[in-house]
Image 1 (cartoon, rainbow, N blue to C red):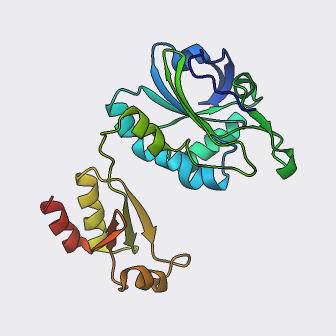
Image 2 (cartoon, rainbow, N blue to C red):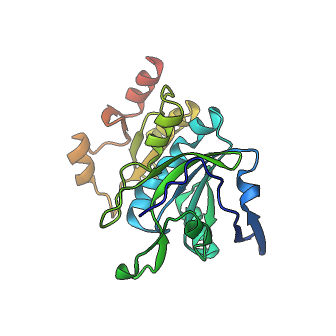
Length: 244
């Protein structure tokens, strides 16, 4: 039975972290004392859901959390510090503090260390999220105890809705570009100047013109999608921005 520790203090643990060429002891008090903190835990760095959805969405929404009073967002996984450091760099997770629970001490004391030996993972944390004020757990969202790796309630949007139900979420922007395309550069500048985070997909060997034709009915670049709707090229984007 997975434990829900709502109302309790976070466990006292010292994490072993290697940064800037030296080992550092990071304590629970350092992470939580006197702070409002969102922590989400996931089974492993570089795993599919963790890399494609769980961490990226928290990183994307982090500025909204922090603008509304959250001091820090922590991603915790039972991996060693070198794996966590490499994954953080790969994910460009600048808004998130990634913590290696290398021995699973924190996860075990939370009552959420599980055996995933059947898939070669050994002991890992169950997927969950929690909101902590000055070391006291105010809310937990623990994934249902079922086979596989459920991902239903520990996501960033659920936590944001719980903490700040009226917070305005940023638009989800995707831009198809091509290397050396001046209009693509103009479109990206427009997005950046308007503080709009975007995902860039570059036309090339992995994503071809056929893909762009299929989703936008054109091979011209750039093509900008905002919240799933096609806006169009750089001129169309400029009109969209000016009409807001």
